[in-house]
Image (cartoon, rainbow, N blue to C red; front, side, top):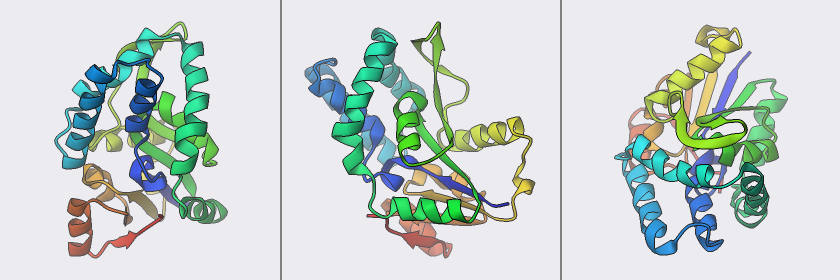
Length: 220
């Protein structure tokens, strides 16, 4: 059996679902534009630069989840999928996903973006398995806190290995492994797989991929 791992934002999507979710809530007037829009932009720029403090960002990102009932959040997310996400699916993504699924590979989206935002996206793309940053919840409502290790940078390896262990698997269970990503933040996990693939990469990842003779592709 082989393993195929896929980053989500700016890889399978031609955009960032975390960023888009906050912008969507700003447009809905759930979040105050004057307070939240510039902070959202600043966090996104820090992410692209590789300087993001993930806990500071998650504190920002999880507040709207804690401040609104789950039923209302789900209704907003349905609208978010239609208005924001469907048009962001990269044109080449479905064919790439289908290839690995037809080959019988274990296909997993692994993303720093939280499960609430990404689970419906993963389902829409045909994935059964998602590893994401987990938002803590109690009695069905979000608390505003992160649960466990954020699925970010080296944390992606931790989250993946925890998932594999829970499913009675290890790295040695796979003859080959792929990871598709756009971001310098994913270099730790890209260095773990047998086939690292840079997808529409940022400049740092592109340079690293060229130096190490990694595959570079575009899904856009």
